Length: 322
Image (tube, rainbow, N blue to C red; front, side):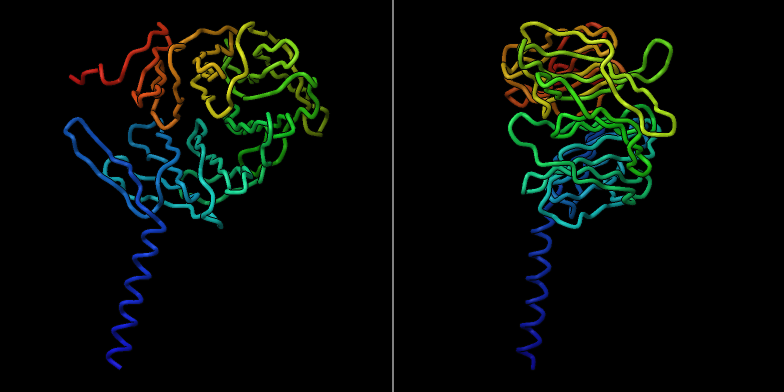
């Protein structure tokens, strides 16, 4: 009997070790000016990170096993954790709405299917979820917060819809687009009157130019609205952008081209600037941004900072903390 008991104990130990190995560890290290550090285990390896705009707000993390968690900034304690039905997916993007009420997580399953989940940012409760599509060829999927209470979704059928963050219901949609237009991203911004405006970035297959177009919503009585292009501008010489490299900061959209150039598109003025064109890079939304800066990584892993006012860039390693 003692032999059987010992075997059972070792079986439990091995099972716990296996479970911990499956959950893996998260390589999130918190650092302050005094070089204090913390690390958190049991939620997987981080694939997407979003910093709450509030200094005391949590750090939101998405991982390679589909887990979404809120961690305290000071100690890395798990405040809440959402566990997906299937751990074979990876969180590719996390965004938070302006009032810190809704957390949007975009995930990619091993099959290639992309899904979107909206969680309560206060406790991680799942509010709604939707399997979007499985991209193939030039098809793109892009999600972005639109205004305060809506989610903009570009799907594989080249269609854009605005959905309620509360329950996922369709508020407005654009179901038809020019056959030569390939939409690649969506972004919202505040116009001069303080109202929320929305734009799309895309590629025209005939002219082979990137374009930016404003979206106009026409409400039809009590039915869902219809989205159409209003103001549009093409940029000659800029090839197709990569939706995996799109990131919005305020009214600016940063985009990667197939030529490894980094472009900044001003959605309000429909103009652009070349920020970086000498080496490949990766836009990484895991880096926090302030009101006038954006950060990205170059081919050597160096974090670089773009000043949105002067459009100058510098390496983060060149910044000294007084």
